[in-house]
Structure formats: C-alpha cells, structure tokens
Image (cartoon, rainbow, N blue to C red):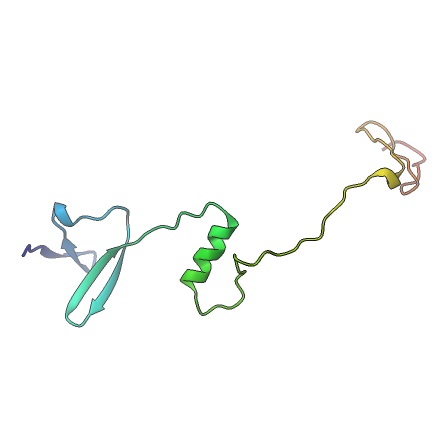
Length: 109
C-alpha cells in the first residue's frame, strides 16, 4: 500500500499524490464512501454538435424533462426562398430602392 503526505494549503487540507497516482487536468470529482475518500478524474465533455449537447444535458440532468429527444426527428417546414414576387429590384449602397413593396424615395439619403 502506498502512502501520501497530508499538509495545509491556504486554509485547506491537501494531499501530495505520488507520481503514479496523478491526474490529468485541473479538477477531480471527490466522493466520501464511509471512511474512504475517493478521487476520480473530472472528464470534460467533448461536444461537437447540438445533438452531443442535448445528449450531455439529458445524461447530466436526468430529472429534467424538457430537453429535446435526439432520437426524435423534428419535422421542419420546408422553407422556400422565392423572390419572384418582390418585383426583382436591386439596391446598391449608393442608389434608391424602388419596388411594389417599397415606394421610391423622393431624395437620396
């Protein structure tokens, strides 16, 4: 069995871990099991997509009920960007725009 030194640091008790017991990162999870104190590495989630975020939140907060279900596909209405009904006007930064939806201005800005 390996032992470690206990010391005081800024008002807290600390343990100097031998090299073989060191952790990656800057934080650990600590649990008390009866007389034992257990340290486990704090894993940072690798979230690359919103689906990963939803999964992480659902696993981290299982009591919450309003997280989106990643297995359920949400049917989005198909959006059509049809500009034919807008009169086909073109505006530049130096001219005045005119269309059936935007009347011509009397003087430039």
